[in-house]
Amino acid sequence: MIKRTLIFFTIIATAFYITCKKDNPAEPTATPMLTPAAVTDTAAWTVNPGNYTHLMTIVATIKLHDQMICSNANKLAAFAGDEVRGVGTPYNHLGCVNYNLIVYSNSPGDSITFGIYLADQDTAVAALNTLVFTTIAGHGSPDFPYAIEVE
View: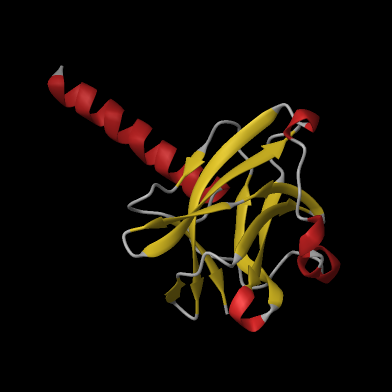
């Protein structure tokens, strides 16, 4: 009985891992998916949560060339196509900056990309990451934030 239960839980855990890995890969994609116009117009990085019925949360940090970027002056936004779906709120944590980001959608399965404004370079760029929108999903935590990567 114990052996059968253990096999059952192993199968369930493996299926869950494969599904999560496929739907939300931890590795960034090879090319940015965000249109240049959406990235560069940082003044338009706003979202009205009342327009959406679903949300997911991300605690993120920004990595440039594999180094953490720790400036409160940077901005982070989530997009579905060229539509802003969330804007990050920066906060200091353990000597660096994390971003609380609520991403909104009306249809689970949207491809979510990210735009980053790098204040010290006065430029906005597309991140390498892509996530699949999943209702009430949570990515990252204050101590282990989801890394939004820029090259």
